[in-house]
Length: 203
Image 1 (spheres, rainbow, N blue to C red):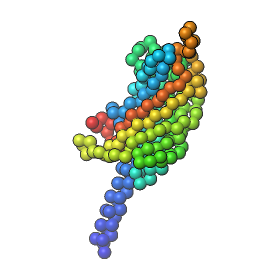
Image 2 (cartoon, rainbow, N blue to C red; image 1 turned 180 degrees about the vertical axis):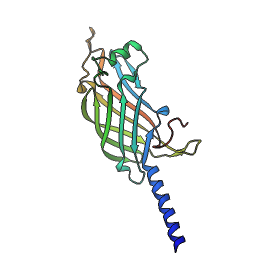
Image 3 (cartoon, rainbow, N blue to C red; image 1 turned 135 degrees about the vertical axis):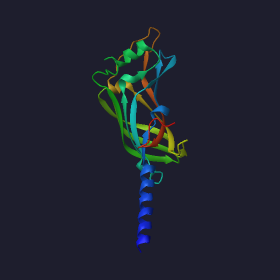
C-alpha cells in the first residue's frame, strides 16, 4: 500500500510540474523584437524598436482562452538608428521618458479565433495615458526544445494605435500637404518564449 501511495505522489508531482511549465513563460529578450512602424512625410516607413523590455505570458494549450500577457518596456531604450531622432523621441515632445519612463501592457481578455490565433484585449499605457487595445496574436501552436532541452514557443502580435490618443501630439505640416509624422503607429512584436525560470542567456 505504501509503495502505491508513494508512486501516486510521484505521478501527481510530475503532473503538477508539467502543468506549471506548460503555463508560465517569460520573454527570451535575446530572441524577441519589440518594434513599431511610422510613416514619414507620407512617403516611407521608419522602423523602430525598444532594446529594453521584460514580460511574462501565461499560456496552457489545454486552456487557450486563459492566455494572459504582462509586459513593461523601457521608453528610453527607443532605437530608430538615428541618434538625433531618438533623442527627440525621448524628449517631452514624445515619450518624455524622464516623467514617463515605461510603457506597459496588461491583458484583460482573450478570444480564441482559431488554432494558434488569438485576440488579446488589454490596457496599453504610453506617456502616462492608458487606453484599451486589441493585439492580433498568431503562434503558440508549436513547441520545440532548445539545445539544452528547454521548451520554447513563439508568437507574433500586432496592433495599430493613434499616437495622439496617448498625448504624443508633436508634428509639422508639409507645404505639399499632409504631415511630417503619421498619427497611426503599427506595433509589431516578434516574441520567443521560454519557461519562466530559465536562464535568459540560453541559446
